[in-house]
Image (cartoon, rainbow, N blue to C red; front, side):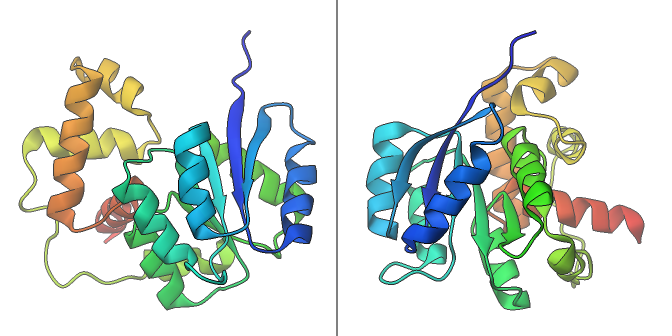
Length: 210
């Protein structure tokens, strides 16, 4: 059995925190830290250079904030799994980062073993939100049916994404090309006015629980 190796970039303006995260990731053979950035601007440059699979992004940094860094990375076409790793459990921060395209939101005060497991799950394509802030998203209200404008095929794709499937798996399940899946997802996110699969999934699951 071939074990997937995930290339990781750590973005944090505190050297001690970067070292701690790197040591934690070193406990799991599936992770290789390929780059460390101490600022948002550096992260954008290194992401283009090293093309990591996973980016662990601090929120509160000097200079370019984590939110602005995230937006810039997505605008540059970076398709890595971007996981916000922060001390902030602010409801507004959670909403802003998820809406801007984050694939997960984890708190730094999580237990190390749980944090490592969440990062592994995120790398594998799952949606990861620390339990302490998960309720913020599940209770987020929508004033209208956000899915009314989606086509039947876009809804099919969203349903599979909500099950945790990758683009490749969705393509196989629906008998369409992976590129077509990407097009459907882009259109779906635009219509739902969100910038990440996580946010779309949360909206979908919440609609099904009502």
